Image 1 (cartoon, rainbow, N blue to C red):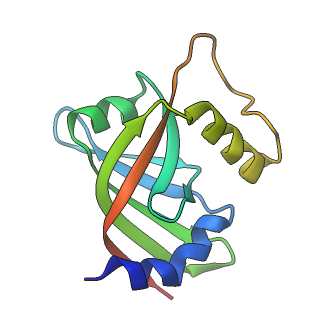
Image 2 (image 1 turned 90 degrees about the vertical axis):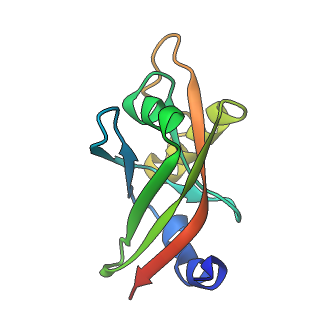
Amino acid sequence: MTTDGTLAKYRDIFEKKAFAHVATVGAGGAPQITPVWVDFDGKYIRFNTARGRVKDKNLQRHPHVALAAQDPDNPYRYVQVRGRAELTEQGAEAHIDALAKKYIGQDRYPWRRPGEVRVTVKVLPEHVQGMG
C-alpha cells in the first residue's frame, strides 16, 4: 500500500482540532489507548507526552504504534496510521506549546508539572487506511 497518496487524502484531518487515539503495547502485551493532540509535519505524525508516562514507557519498550483520527467535521471520515515511533526531547517544549495553541488557543501548554521533561513522538507512517 502506498502511504503517500492515502495520507495526502486525509492530511487535512491533522490540520484540524482532531484528537487521535493512540494505541501502544503495554508491558504485559495488552494494548493501551490514549487520546492525544496531534499534527503532521509533512513526514511524521506527531504527538507529545512526558518522560515516565505510560505512552513513553510503552514506546521505549516497543516502538510500534497505531493511531486513528476522526474528521471533526464529518465523524464518518477517519484515517488510521500504523508505524514506528521515534521519541525525542529536542524541540518537545516548543511542540507542546504549538499543540496548545492549535487545540486550546493558548501560547503555552498550561498543565506543565515541575521537573517534567516533554517528549515529541514522531510516527513514520508505514500503513495508512482511511474512510470517507
